[in-house]
Image (cartoon, rainbow, N blue to C red):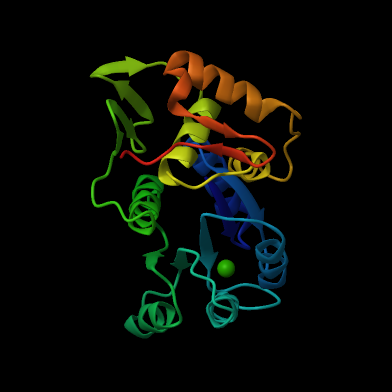
Length: 220
Ligand code: CA
């Protein structure tokens, strides 16, 4: 899953980027409203964490422009202003959730999981598929009640495919969920992760659609 973090405070932004990566997300961090719009136009994100007080363009302006353009991207706003009016105008401008600074990273991570869960139409915190259970909170995967040992990137690929069951995800889309723009990408990394997932789980779990990408079919 790939997140866009928009925060002009160096210390907070850096801490969030590190903490969110430890939670298994690919994170792009930008520090002003105009950069946020450039990154949103160029990349595919699963969620945006948006500070309101930003240079160049305010968080509210960025948010309103996105919503006017038809974007349904889940947005969590961060605000130092804890007045009721700020929260109301943030939510009325299209934010899905807000956190008042200072906040706890664990709470932010839990709210992100809740937003992503809502977006995928799940009520349950874990993802179930046949005898497989994936828990985004604990980063655990169980098959028939037994833990499966996956690397963080194998977990991230499996989670993306399960969250998008029935939809073919291109290699580029899967790569976007794994790497930030600053990271070097191995040209065959996704194929290698898919190969390992098929070996550790079962071969038919992930179907290759030649020339298009990969899919986990919905349970029939
Ligand atoms: Ca700020």
